[in-house]
Image (tube, rainbow, N blue to C red):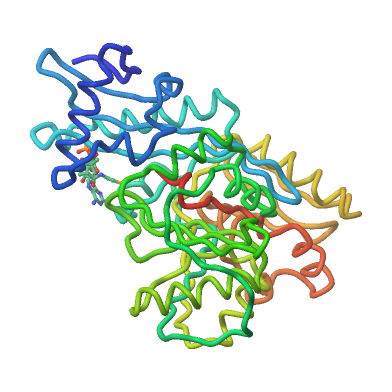
Length: 363
Ligand SMILES: CC(C)(COP(=O)(O)OP(=O)(O)OC[C@H]1O[C@@H](n2cnc3c(N)ncnc32)[C@H](O)[C@@H]1OP(=O)(O)O)[C@@H](O)C(=O)NCCC(=O)NCCS
């Protein structure tokens, strides 16, 4: 048995065959079509396998993302397609592969690693914790909006440039190219809904579905709130059944508008997060506080604990999982009862951090 190591270029078809058999047995497409940037040849060095003479036994892939937000530019290592051959489970193979992915993420200066799973306890053993916020709305019924002169379309042949132009206006987004946007638009089971101005400019878009996942979920969208609301109203009428839109917590205007409509709101987590370069992340957060005129924010890692606070109001945090929640949320600093209300106002200038990963980036 050898590895964890990255596959050689010539082994890529064999690795994808293993993943398709284990994770996409029912699908008529390859997993590589669903995650075109993670399984691209230029990310081969971030794929990890353990193999023996018989073939691949275990796999995971790391896809580093640069995520811009108003306060911090994060480097995030997204981890996905974690799987071990049935006959070789329980021998620590996935644990070894994941440890190696975390080491790779660290060596590439990722602040955090993130993954999406329902095996919470499996990943908690490695220090991941459910953190960050995701708000979802089930659009239960048709709703009326002020009439607009927009034209709506379900044609998926939309220029990636137009989508990219609206994507780039988000306050929190990952660095992408138009070429990557083009690849994302061709993911199997993708539905594209668009709203167009009379002059032919794209006003709003909403993307539903992503391979075997996210059917019935709008996981990428863009455009101003009124135009997006008009598009959502069109989608509800067009589908004639409920669907869900996923939003970051900081999309306050959209959230406010949606709450006025016949919707069911659910609050969830962004994913499972683990800090991999704590000092680097702490440095970024301290700079964000300084830029807000708060020079005495404290965030330190000691061998057995973290120190967190502002000025003289300093607290010891023993668990890494608690620290992740304090930084990325969901967290109610009032309910914690540790800070004075003036201090909470200062803390909330930067925290919880506005981290968001759009659907096409999740792997
Ligand atoms: C989950 C999976 C990747 C684990 O692979 P593996 O190589 O058997 O993992 P390891 O041997 O490194 O770890 C097994 C350990 O995790 C524990 N574990 C496994 N599944 C678990 C779960 N669902 N919840 C909690 N612990 C779990 C085992 O009890 C074992 O613990 P131990 O080391 O204390 O005995 C494997 O079962 C698999 O491929 N599942 C199907 C695909 C899948 O669900 N992937 C996850 C997608 S996010």
